[in-house]
Image 1: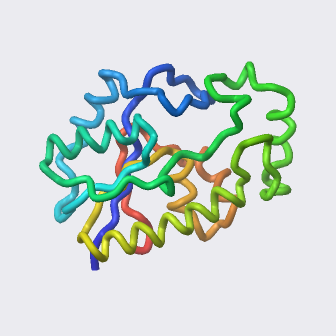
Image 2 (image 1 turned 135 degrees about the vertical axis):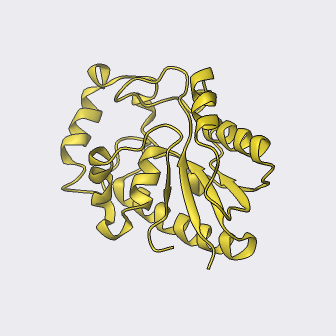
Length: 185
């Protein structure tokens, strides 16, 4: 059976705690160094899949360049949680009141959305589809490395918790360029 390894992208421009990065945020030099330090990869990985968001794509491209492994797929299933546009580029102290109100109710009502953002139920459903995609891709290409983002990775590794997995992410955060196996490999 092929293994599936998950990796968070490296550090990106503008990162601050609680910051919802714009999609175009690029890796920093430190982010590229974090990726280099994350090597070598676990033995047996034969291919890479990645989120289409630039910081993840840049991480995957750098890993590919340094290891010679091909990037066999780019999938929106691996994209970060789709935060509402009203918080992109903001930090916690500048969140609008509508977002603060949603945050207070999101675990009690996981299907609730804040404006154009993804609900916790939406995120969990996408993570389930992502897990199926990763297993299918590993079946075709052998052991893979999937490069993605902290919130999606946290939900993906805690699928059994349902939409509440979102809350677990804060308890066990992913460091930049950190790798973990997908549970159930």
